[in-house]
Image (cartoon, rainbow, N blue to C red):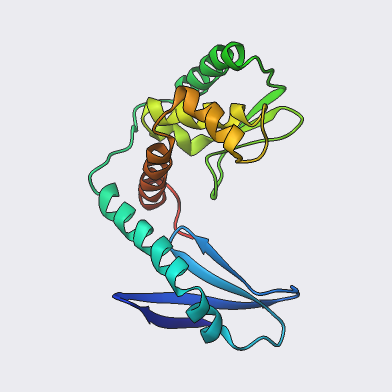
Length: 190
């Protein structure tokens, strides 16, 4: 069910989904707000009002990033093979710097993250990353490899990432901008 709410100066559409869950929760998938509610929970307006500041902040960031995406372009010339070689070379370089071993590297098209890392040392890299500037590819790979030392996004993890990327918050913002551009340009309409 689609609903609309005005929070400050923004008109926000959201979807209500009832599931077999114990507690209500909000999910923001890029620019789509979903309320996941327990069966029989009907007071979604109250839930939205309770979290209006969080919703406003997150949606504002997405809208700003959408505007910034208009000033960026994707690298459509890098081939899949060039991308894979770039990532594998960088993994080799960073493995020595961080003193970690990667078990397996997989390249897959993912719709919700740029990469992931398992406690078994398996690193997944989003194939759509190939369209981004090299510095952002390096950041994502380094971020995932830092998880081989610290799995959580803890202070320790942030310190590890900061050794190579002092501006990691800025890099995260750029990743959102480029994700919106990839979504608009490359991904099939869903």
